[in-house]
Image 1: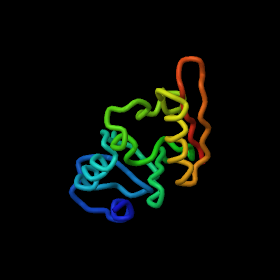
Image 2: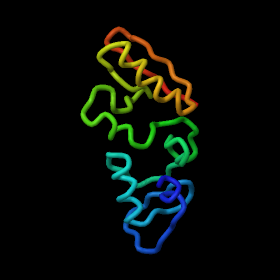
Image 3: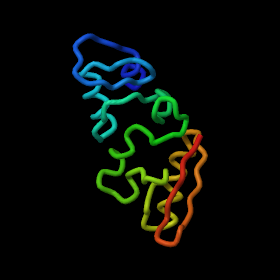
Image 4: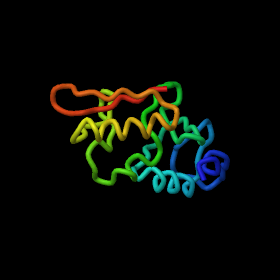
Length: 124
């Protein structure tokens, strides 16, 4: 399904959402919103169709994994913080569980406590 999202370009478009250099039609933007469980602002993004990792075009840093917000629907730690971390999680065990999920997808992850909670930092 992810490769399908990245591979088709069509003509009827009102949004300016580009993924991997291709402008998505409104149907594909709606599919991307559904898969990510979050609004997708107009902009240019890269998406790894194998892992679901995504980021902003021109910036290699992973901003998240497609569907993160779906997996956590309302749960702690579901959103990317301004400093590039996820959290806070309720326990270190919960942070490590989430870290292991990213590790299984090939990412480097550090789980830590910063004084006010348990967090993870995800990178390539």
